[in-house]
Image (cartoon, rainbow over all chains, first blue to last red):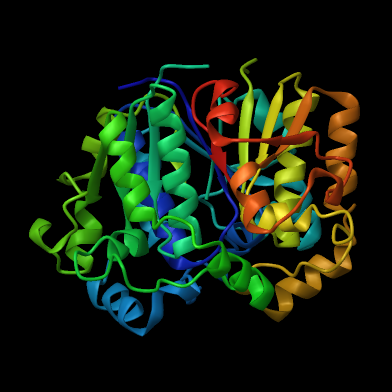
Length: 134
Length: 134
Length: 134
């Protein structure tokens, strides 16, 4: 058990990976760890206010059977799990400025789960050791 | 060089990523590090007793030439490399309870390489710093 | 803020992930952190001297709109960002011996950004805690 910050770079925007990231975030927050999240590329795109609840697909490797198991399971949506993690713990979510520029986005285009945007150097200011890339 | 536990979350179930994960596990175990593995989603599916040795494909980006190089190389199967890592070091492999539920699996459905199942909070009890997501 | 080495295992060879990896490397180097990079599989393939500048595609999840945003953005090529990171900081890039063997490559086949090859145990000699897998 450890009390260092868990730093997550979210890159992928499929629902299965975002769900896995949300579960890890909630697990870490429940154990009293601070979580520091940085949204890049397709993960950032998935956090747009008007896209959070659309279908973002799953990894191609899932196959038909895997996709059916995923859909049948009816898990809580990842955005709700991130919301719960923010309620119970110290979880910050920032958008990568470079990716914001790429998609021509403003902070108000994003879901309120996102606390703001920052550059990569600023993200690393709060990084305590390595980062987890998802 | 470091003696902290290497915590790996395995999410992907393609043979190339599982092979990379197995090689990192064996490398860390050989250096005397404890390895703590958590199987989610498609990686868990690949550890079913009746599926370990089936063809799980490689990442789509491999392309024809990459796939041929991979197959020609005839590397040791990832399940054997994980087995060797368990023989030489302290390597624990647990299935994520949520993913077990999603696939409606019981521990006896999994390959004996898997030591049991646990929830994400329990996994984080043994996490020493960040996690590596594969 | 932290001064430990950032250890990155690059597995994926698509341009979007290599770009994300390059930006993280530059960010860490700019904050004074040592960066230790290990090239496996498709990432190694992308560092061949004669392939660095070819089109390596993006993750399938990008979709048409995402790909257009990526191309329109005209970001600095990832190889240049890695070069800049090496100029400003302490960044080492090594090829995984097993992957070199798989692709039947010699060090002289690789871009000069690559400092040499090493085995996974040798890579872990310099690992300070966990690794980031991209």
